Length: 115
Length: 112
Image 1 (cartoon, chains in turn blue, brown):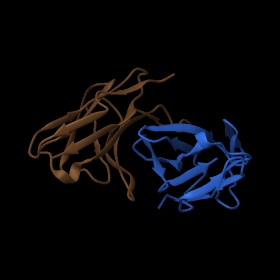
Image 2 (tube, each protein chain N blue to C red):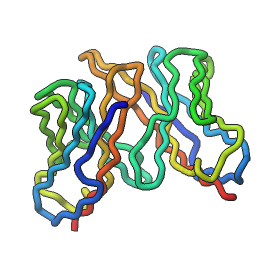
Image 3 (spheres, chains in turn green, cyan):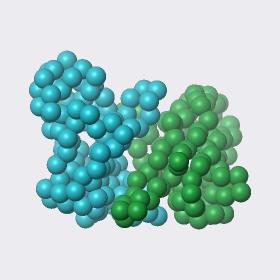
């Protein structure tokens, strides 16, 4: 079945370090892929997305490229800030024959950035 | 921007009470979802709805029901609250397959 696997956290980095959070997926076809961010005490916010192979999603200095050959959608940022400390979720869209859709989420990766 | 509003940020209820969690969206989206989020367990889908008066069970529907009488409002009902339903509850909408969910801010429910 469809699934998303993320690297386990927590990931702890110093400010201005390079960030990679790995995400791989299993799916039939080529679903749209998403990264969400959840700051402490809040709901999830869409960070970026890619809807087809080789698309690059980007937002707030974060990037992720849809790689169908490796079924991956790794999240990267060149220089993290303390304010990036949050939980990051990778997700794919799953479509049902009844005409509706839902997202399948990874387990989430906690990022802690210290000064 | 789509706005998804959950009626309460924090809620404390007693065991056995009937609890209503409300979610309202302002963008005419057909698909709406209720998740709960617990440490170490990630996001788990409780119920979803893809049209007015339509509902589908998610992965953990036991102890919950839902109501969708109008397109903009999707209510989660805890029929008889129990302490193991203490959790963060998240509502979301989905406009279509190339768009992501828009989430509400969440309701942190404590059952004592």
